[in-house]
Length: 351
Image 1: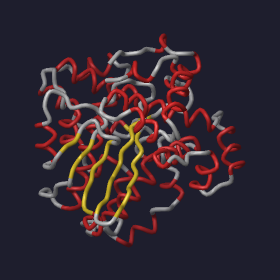
Image 2: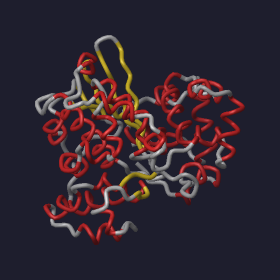
Image 3: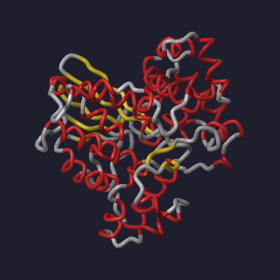
């Protein structure tokens, strides 16, 4: 795949795809729990790497510190490249993924009555931990799909962060359902590295790459399982303002972006549809975004560009399939839109 930089893009594409000054994605430094020990095992200098990507060394010891997500992405990709460890993100997920690493959100999840409710709570309040990841739960007869969308913030490489996120999700589910629990299958948008053995060993199920989403698939019956140690007496605190507003960067734009990710594959991602999804009028949606210096059209374009790059880099989906997943009625309309924003045909981004 040809790696494009901002210099290859139109001014408009640069603003959309690489915008870093308005509501950049952020995350609690808890996502780096275990990184220092992992780096030592791989003969890496963790502090030197952290400084190299522009992070303060204290982020390795201060889980509640809020850091730019793009710097966390770069740290993981850099460590993986230097050490020659393509499964670094998976390894990190095994070392640092504990319910406590989610902070206050972990406490809320723990006291939900069952796994379904815990995942719904996680999806609805994930901004208490991160604004760089969206989680959505979809159920069909007998099957549940937990989809994770990683907001790249303009970064071209987010493989390690994506694999760490899905590894962490499975670790969380095993905390609810027992260490022997296994998903039905796991899916990634990106291509497989040298081998999928680390993935099959960690997840204990078939792992598919070059798919249309990053997701964990499990039987819907598993969602009915009670959460161990849940205390129903604490659930009344879940909607207290102090907890509800404890996000690390939740904004109206963030909520709109979440709705866009949910609605895009259905091809119904107009501003009116998103407003209805959020329970407000279209005019209110426009006003709320404008108050934060945002516009719906730009948020939609950002989401589409991020997903388009991932799908194209994956290489498995046809152009027609990609167009449909991004909410375009025809391949030609997708191609024209892509060329207008990126000044290049989609085929030039093919993996």
